[in-house]
Length: 94
Length: 94
Image 1 (cartoon, chains in turn orange, blue):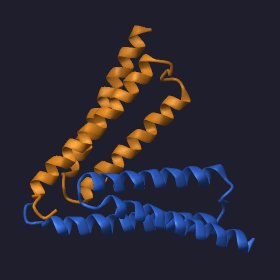
Image 2 (cartoon, one colour):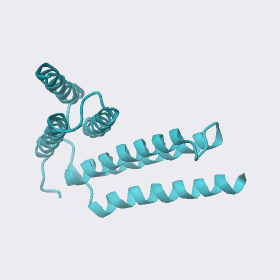
Image 3 (cartoon, each protein chain N blue to C red):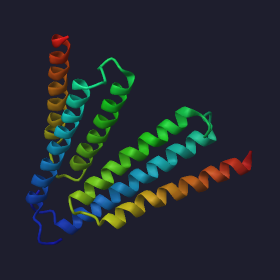
Image 4 (cartoon, rainbow over the protein chains, first blue to last red):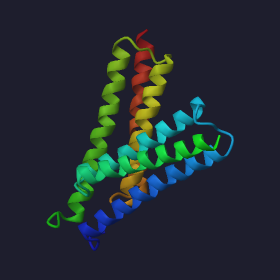
């Protein structure tokens, strides 16, 4: 474990967080294309839970000193923006 | 950031996770001593959400290679055991 360098670990943390953000995006994308509508309470719950989980990971990486707080916030903000765009696209197709 | 050593970061990760586990324990302890009963759905929801958040942090530390998977599982198991004891104590006092 000692051979890993801190900058490498910071990169790994960012890669993991981005991958998890993408996973949430894809999950919501699939949900929208299939049965579940954004008005469905279950959809909201799934999204809230996933966003909460990601925010905990981001906060943890910040508390460890692996990423800056602002960078952490930008991961969440970016995902929220992408989801809002997706939502809008879905609504305009109806 | 480069001055921090990986073993120090692993220690920090463990300290953060233990502190978060303690926080959940205390939250549930306070809830039990006050208004909210373990039979209340809100209690279950708070507990589930907090446990989910902690499990995400633990998994993240494991994925980063900071802690072993088994150690991560032991943090969750230990907290669950402490909460079960607390629950039992609460029920026996009634």
